[in-house]
View 1 (cartoon, rainbow, N blue to C red):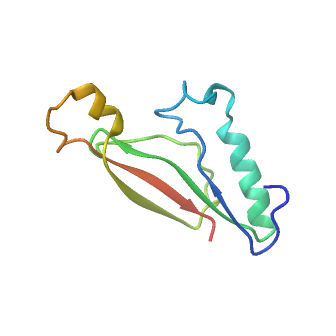
View 2 (cartoon, rainbow, N blue to C red; view 1 turned 180 degrees about the horizontal axis):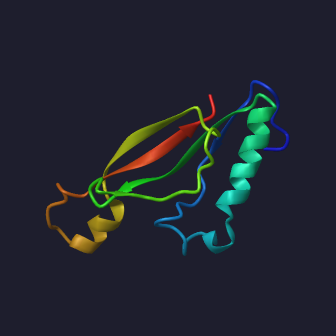
Length: 108
């Protein structure tokens, strides 16, 4: 991200803090540091898209994130369909009530 220049687009897909904190070495991942780097990119005219936690438990739970006010210009909820984790846990039961969404934050 430090090499990005004005007009570039950087896509970030970090470990999801609400669901992946024990996966992929995410224990050492620091979302707050990433947000600082995103701010630096924005100040240089680099566009950043951040895909991260959204809703869980059929949209009834909004994942809390330390997103600073004014860092992103817009937020889009992306319907991800049925929860992958629940597919394994529910073993053949209906997943109609297990729809989740991710957030896509855009600095532009």
